[in-house]
Length: 299
Image 1 (cartoon, one colour):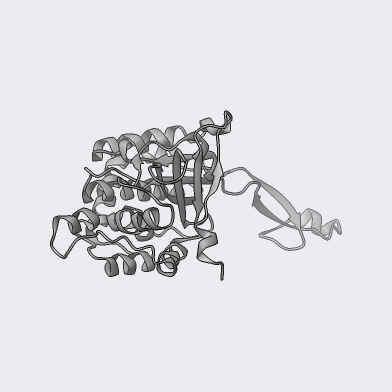
Image 2 (cartoon, one colour; image 1 turned 90 degrees about the vertical axis):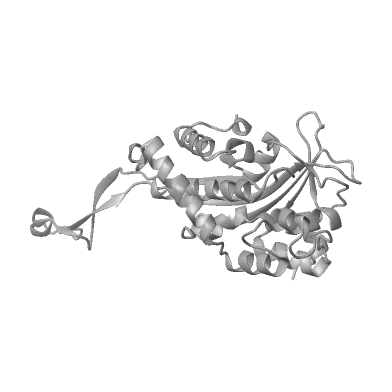
């Protein structure tokens, strides 16, 4: 087993001008992150007593308490409130964007007929002519296009549970739609903030893959990115204990192109893109229309 201290040791990357120093950490998955917290005792110590305003700030009202958050993250499950928000945004996007116009964009429909020694259709002319390859079949020439998207779960103190859930629902909706359009979707949940602490870093980012391109779509698991305690308990504990964040535990910011390049993200979901249901749907609709555009970091 890899030593947890090696896992949480950041890699330092900088932009072309050797400025804006980014410290980045990549977890292999949610379980590895949770195990690092346990092994390193990186627990946040200011979650508040049961029923307090501090507890509400940390966990919200739906998935409350450290043990409860741990269970949901390990199982990849959320709650009815998350699912209802997902269905609401999904229906709004269907009406807004007209999903059918995008069908098949991620999956080539080009086919060609090949002859072989077994297949679907028999060629009598080839059989009578003595050709061994007298069966024909139709094959697709290209495979599904892969696309990697990410969601920044780091949002500032004035936001509440509904904002977290809307953020997670936006990620789940776009992942669902892209999969149905024919794309092989990979999803990264990450925490990207301006750094405030002991080290001379400008930004900090930690990433957690929650869906590989070859894995089936699991809406509940995607929605776990919107569990408030994931950021305000799990990430806060790591940020304070492993990376020596000071007061404020970082500041909400847009993901830089350098970090998008590090994660190879084609598209990202950020809180300021989905402050309301309507804004979230508009952002997802616009994202779908720009799938063929290269992101800035690739140019």
